[in-house]
Every structure is written in structure tokens, then in C-alpha cells.
Amino acid sequence: MKILAINSSPRTGGGSKTELMLNNLIEGMRDAGAEVDVVNLREKKIKNCIGCFACWTKTPGHCVHKDDMTRELFPKWLEADLVVYATPLYYHLMNSAMSRFRERTLPAIQPFFEKSDDGKTFHPLRHKIPAAVWLSVCGFPEESEFDALSSYLNRTRHKGETLAAEIYRSAAETISHPFFKEKATDVLDATKQAGRELVKSMAISPGTIARIRQPLVDPKLFAEMGNLFWKTCINEKVTPKEFEKKHMIPRPDSIESFMWLFPVGINSAAAGNRKIILQFDFSGQTEGSCCFIIDNGKIKAKKEPEANPDITIKTPFDVWMDIMTRKADGQQMFMEQKYTVTGDIGLMIQLFTKKGNK
Ligand SMILES: Cc1cc2nc3c(=O)[nH]c(=O)nc-3n(C[C@H](O)[C@H](O)[C@H](O)COP(=O)(O)O)c2cc1C
Image 1 (cartoon, rainbow, N blue to C red):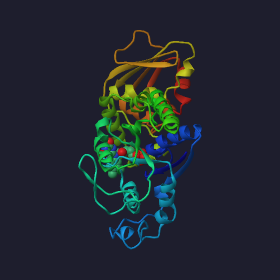
Image 2: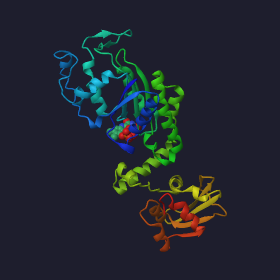
Image 3: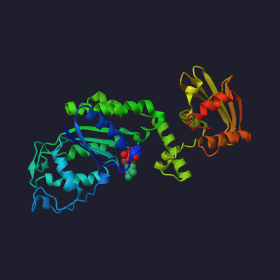
Image 4: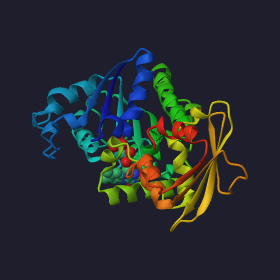
């Protein structure tokens, strides 16, 4: 099976969740024996359709433009058995790069008006056009973000064009966050599986779709973590890409948000088989306590203090947030007695340093 995968995300590498999902889908397709050609539209020169209808009249089937679409992509598109259209969701639809590509497939259509069985007018096709799989990712957590795209795709489908599958992943920006690793790994494995299934049967089973769409994050936690992330980007004047490149951490602004974020940086393996209780007593503008129970590689956060913690850190909240977000050096702050530690300091250092925290 000849597959053409068209990626319209302007972002690259780890930054693009469209690309991440597409790469997994393609891996599954190749596993199942398909020949997959990948085209990144950001690398191609494709002019806008100018609506001259020369491709319907003067040069039937041929566009007036001379660019990457006419020279390379349109012939490849016609030859494919299946095309994967992978687009980030922009304002509830495909992005402009994908839309431009789609408009330029007009030469595959004839100008005449015909009626389908349900009474709708349509243009007949000039060529047999490839079956389609749509893949899209979006930032918001709600599945309904894709409703407009899905309804659009089902309405604009040409008569005789197969829409083999729609693959949608909401809250996609969380996929590469270590916090959601377990579920995200399953989503990506399911996307690979979807690739294998498509090659074998031109369809994706409901079970695989459900795994791809599984909720990754509680919507309330999503909004609070997301807001902390954006506030940190604004305060530090960095783009999301720079944030990721610098391995930055969103700065907690409450004990609750500290409790969600702190475990990501802990090297729980350093505790070995021991059950460790690590407690924070915060002072300053944000006062209160919380503790982390590290047991068998798992970390549980608790708001109530424990009677006999193994390690207790007494610190002004802001000082620890500076250390956690690497604005201040933990050892330096300790020497300057900005915070105190009681209990197993050696273990504390192991818990914090192996993942780059101080
Ligand atoms: C111009 C623009 C419009 C967007 N519109 C939506 C939207 O309607 N709904 C949504 O949930 N996310 C929206 N997003 C977020 C993207 O879908 C999200 O960041 C996605 O991960 C982008 O894909 P990429 O990672 O491949 O670049 C929008 C982003 C941009 C830049």
C-alpha cells in the first residue's frame, strides 16, 4: 500500500504534537508493510489557488501555477492509495497550510453539476482520488473541539472519496510532559496500532480509537497547570519552545500547585526500598505544610503534616520556588541559612540532584 502522509504543522521536533502523533501512526503503517512518503508542508512552496478555473477549462486537470504542488505533490497525491492529512487544530479547523494544499487539488475535480441520492449537488471527479485519514491535535482538553472539523470533513468529502478514519487528540500539549507519561505512552502505542490496523483493514477499531482519545488529565488540574505554565512564560519572557529548550519548570504559586509539580523532579529511586517521608514547612507570604510519601518508586503528596518525617525542610515559600525553578542555587541558599533541613541530608541531596534539582 502506498501512503502519502502530509504534515501541515509549522512546528518541528519535540515541539509539534501533530508530528509526534503522525510519527507513531507512520511507524505502525511501516510495521504493517506500507510504503509511506512523508511531506512536511512547511518545507514546500505552494501558492494559493487563484480561482481562475483554468484547470477546468483551458488546461483540464492542470493548474496554472508552477510550484512544488504542481511539480511534486499533486502527482504523488493522485498516485497514493491512502493519504494522511495531519494538521494542528487552528480555530477549530485545519490550519491554513493544509487548507491551501486542499484547495490546490481542484484540478482533480470536473466542473459539472450532478445530484447525489440525497439531493445534494456535487462535482464529479476527474481522477480516482485517494482514501483519506485525518489526524489532528489540539490544545484544549475537550473532545468537542474537533466537532467543527469532523462535520466539515464529512460534508466536504467528494462523492466516492473514502474517509477511512479520523484521529483526534485533545490536550495534546500534555503528551510529552513527564507528569502524564504512563497514559501518554499508551496513547502513542495506540496510535502505532492504528497505523497497523489501517494498513490491514483501512479502518481503526473502536477500542484503538478509545485508547487514542482517552482522557489524559483532569480538566481542573489541566487549567491550573496550564495557567501556571503561561504565567511563567510571561514573567520570564520566554516562548513555549524556549521554555522547553531551557528545561524550565512552571513556578508554583500555592502549596497545592507545588504539590502537583514537585514530584516530577524527585528521583524516587534514590529511596530504594525504604518508605521516606519528606516534609516542607513553608513560611512567608505562603504559609503551611505539605509532605511527600515516597514508597516503592511512587510519590504521594499530602497536605497534612506527618508525625515523624525522615526529612523536614523549613523554608520561606519563595526561596524554595526560586530553588525549584533554578533561579537560586540550593546549596548556596543552604549555606546562607535561607532554609534549614533536619533529618537525612544525604538522602535529600540524592532525591533532588539526580534529576537536576537542587
Ligand atoms: C492560531 C492557533 C489557533 C489555535 N486554535 C485552537 C483551537 O481552536 N482549539 C484548541 O484546542 N487549540 C487550538 N490551538 C492550539 C493547537 O491546536 C495546539 O497547540 C497544537 O498542539 C498545535 O499543534 P503542533 O503541536 O503540531 O504545532 C491553536 C493554536 C494556534 C497557534
